[in-house]
Length: 403
Picture 1 (cartoon, rainbow, N blue to C red):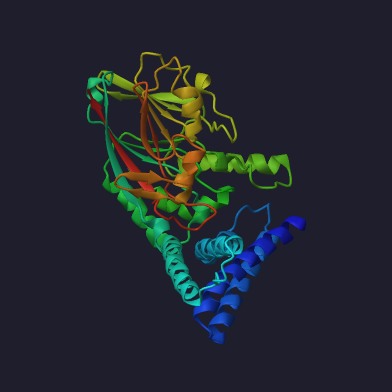
Picture 2: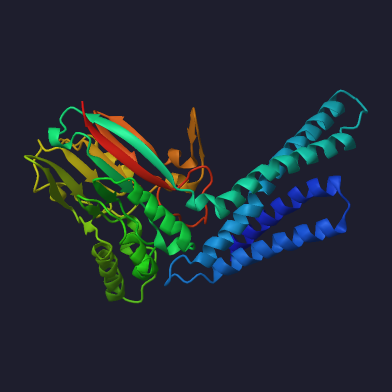
């Protein structure tokens, strides 16, 4: 209860502080009433949804939408508060300067305050529009990112081999059948040799995927479709009534993969053959520095040799950073997901930034160390915040080339 009260007081303080910008430039009581009605309604809705959140069902779309609305109205207010706070700091410093210099000049300049308030509201409009776009359009703004990677030890028959990498479907968050169908068609348009999925097919429970099985069954790749599990596939974030109930859900999640035509690799490996050449495809269960460690790289690699060219599927990129890249076996290419690029950031020519980079060294795109590559997919779906801002959902196409 104390935490809730502190949380509410902080948000109301931000509301009150941001309100000063409106109060400075307008005296319209309708605008004032609308501001407070919307602010309190959004906050009350979020608190109610979170307080009545059923851990037995996992994060619902209602909870995600309530969180999205809170972010929508809170973010611009924070920007406005920062601008107004800088003006108040100026006032305090000016007041102190006047006091010690025996100056009678007032530190309060009404015209300046009006100007600063207009600047605050103008700047606040930018994140408001960005969040609104991210919730309305950004979460389904699929991007096809293509990479060509070169390897000296790639078997000749696999020169030009093309794979499509998808990750983090999070089917429990989907709310637009037309957009999902478009995403599926976009994957098939790449006409890759194989499709590789690196985990988190659901948010929590197997039934989340039921309405979408018919869509994902349409994915096509001439040399097969393969997958691994992510941290959300183990049902760790739901309060189960019994251990047996959790185990049944886990089995049902694993059973989804063959239903949509994917071979699920659970700490296992297979060979892909072309003529007399072959490459190894290795799939580990989730291994995360901060999450479940069910992955066993040694067990997954028992059927292959050190000399094989290997593609490793491991959901969490911290696995590559902590175990894979320095491993005595040469895992030439690792495919991961998990981070979602935090669904928020800036990616423009010359700038690539997201807060998630302070947690994960490899968080989006292709990285290379010790002549070994990892691609971190930004995710097909979304979770918690029902949108994406600057970091769009991704379909990765990687072409392997012999150097």
